[in-house]
Structure formats: C-alpha cells, structure tokens
Image (cartoon, rainbow, N blue to C red; front, side, top):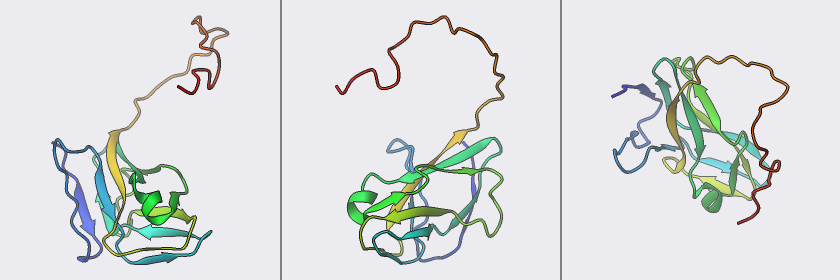
Amino acid sequence: MQKIRIKYFTDKIDKLEYIEGKSDWIDLRASETVELKAGEFKLIPLGVAMELPKGYEAHVVPRSSTFKNYGLLQTNSCGIIDCTYCGDEDMWRMPVYATRDTVIKQNDRICQFRIFENMPTIQFDETASLDNENRGGFGSTGKQ
C-alpha cells in the first residue's frame, strides 16, 4: 500500500477518502465558494497539497456530473500533478471555464483524481516503415 502525506488548507471540507473496491478515483472538493459568470475563467482551490510517492503523478479530471451541475469545463482537459509539486503552499487547483453563470459551494465535489506510475524511460528508434497493417487512418473505425 502506498502512503501519501496530505496537507489540508482548511477544516471546512471533508477529508479525502479512498474506498477500496468502489472506485479507483478519489473526489476532490472546492475549498471555498466560487462564483463564475458565463465566459469566465478561474482556478478553483481544492484545499489540499500532497506528497505523492516518487515516480508517480496524479491525474485530475472533472467528475461526470461537473458539467451538468455547474456548466464548467476543465480548461486543460486533464490536470497532471507530478511528485515534485509537494511544497507547503502547493495547493491543488482546478482550472475551469464557465459556460453559464454558476456557483460552486465550499465542500462541493467538483473533480476527482487518481495516481499513475510515471512512464518508464524509453528510446525512439527511427524507421522508414513500421511493417504493420494499416487500419485506415485516424477516425476510420466509424461511429458505431
């Protein structure tokens, strides 16, 4: 089992909880109330900093209900937090763009994360041909 040291910036959000067997993703919460107008960009503070294990990174993505409930799009599609972002002031945040006027209340579950092992060291070997069958190009598998 990996242990992760975590610092909370407020006691007004629920503590993070990993529920074995339920999901590999852990919900993150807004650590303060944030109001956005349609077309506005903000960084939503998530109220935590973590020391991830060496050789791991966190992927932060919206929850499946984030757009439906708040009209928010995460501006970088997937946030990547590497293990060196672990200082006392390195609070995690979610960059969002509002498609409508919205309010995220303190402690609302707004996004989720999981950790992944870093990519192994690789080497590229240039070649004139990959010697494999072509699948038909990008988007060639159709709609169904």
